[in-house]
Image 1: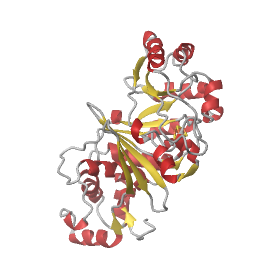
Image 2 (image 1 turned 180 degrees about the vertical axis):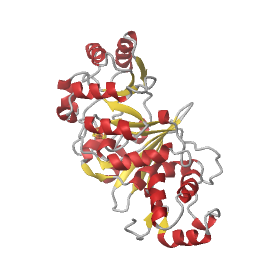
Image 3 (image 1 turned 90 degrees about the vertical axis):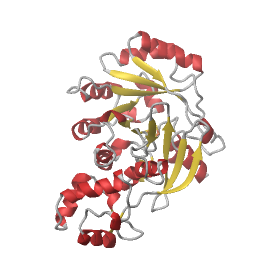
Image 4 (image 1 turned 180 degrees about the horizontal axis):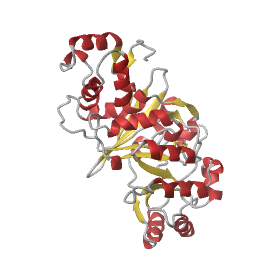
Amino acid sequence: MSSATQKINLLNFNSTDLAAFFVEHGEKPFRAQQLIKWIHQLGVTDFSLMTNLSLVLREYLIANTEVRAPRIVAEQKSTDGTRKWLLELDDGNKIETVLIPEDDRVTLCVSTQVGCPIGCAFCFTGKLGFKRNLEIWEIIGQLWLAVRALSPDGTSKTHAVTNVVLMGMGEPLLNFENVVKAVDLMLDDLAYGLSKYRVTISTAGIVPAMERLRELSKASLAISLHAPNDELRSQIMPINKKYPLRELIAACKQYYQNEPKRVVTIEYIMLAGVNDSVAQAKELVKLLHGLPCKVNLIPYNAGDVSNLPGAISYRASAQEVIDSFRNVLLAAGINTITRKSRGADIAAACGQLVAKKSD
Ligand code: SF4
């Protein structure tokens, strides 16, 4: 329900919930599929244009419901094509969404919470603290907006966003129900129809929730690992004290047990002098032994928020250090890529734009 207008926001429903909603209101459940297609695939918000719905239903929808995404209040464009949107929610809170175009894909990085309770030492969002979980409409609304932004007149036949990573502000698995339902829509053929290989939920390692996620969603799994041993990981990611590496890696090994062709993605931010030595690369090889995985090495994006209170002092590893680290992993047979640093000129690292605008 929207607090502003008291109308029911239809972006809050996945297909199953919308069918139940229609049955409750004396309609046939297949109306849900028709409406999902109008709203998400075609981007139509004017119910009077939905001509395959009965007149009575259209009138009901006009009087009682709406399709409303968060409001874009700022946009930054990087010279490398990365676009970052600052979105305002009904309660005035702000979140970020980042669009990253590459040669063969367009990835949208989606937020799942306002702030984040995990408090990783190197993360700007962590510094902002935690305010609340995002609702379904606030999560799927980010994709809805991005698709519209890429095809403003709705003429594009296919959605230009090819990949979604739930890797923006927040820990997705601490907003479990809403994240799973928003991801349902991303994978739904009548909505965005993205492949399960192209929608990735990234977690800092909420082990019990990973077990539930495996049962309830087909999306891909990524782990924000960032350290090869418990001592360092607990220092830079306090969640490790609760779910140490032994438990986390065991949960990863179980994750795709029934789908042997799928692998877990390991995200590893390269922090100069902290986690980037050759010895630590060897430790990582040992840790990942027996886990079907691929590793993404991510150059740290220090951004330009050094004037903010509680500024973060981490620095990015030098390119040759990253290369040496990667070579150790590759030599051990671990599929490893170094991600390109994106949007460095627009504070594209998670939380930086909100931090700047709140300063
Ligand atoms: S890195 Fe992710 S999990 Fe850690 S504080 Fe930042 S948003 Fe939260």
